[in-house]
Image (cartoon, rainbow, N blue to C red):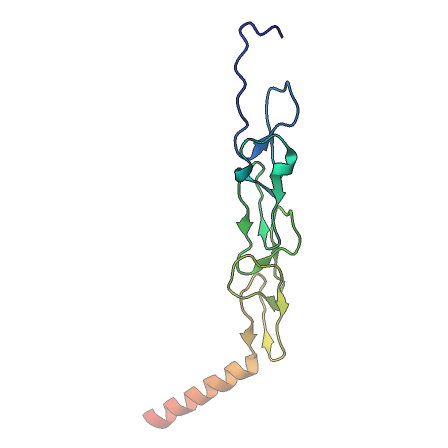
Length: 140
């Protein structure tokens, strides 16, 4: 190129970088990464940081990671999705979940992607039976 009629070079936008000279476009940060906006203009793929545990980013070129929410988790860095807590497990009601825990003895969970385990079926039936007997006693 001789520079005659050449367009002016522009900075890569946040979420993108270009580490070589003479290119016509920028490269988006990969899925599972966020662009470190404190670094300013992207001149290196090192500016694309891996999402932490409990986070993910499914879109390339992002400037932020998203938290794994209730019923999901992520136990590795640099992920593009969160894993679902399986049946028999839960993980509370917080954000940035890194694990799911098995339901303790006397509790169960018959659905996946849940925040809490349920009480035993026997306990629920027992409590219902007590309430029913009290209603019969007072109204009969």
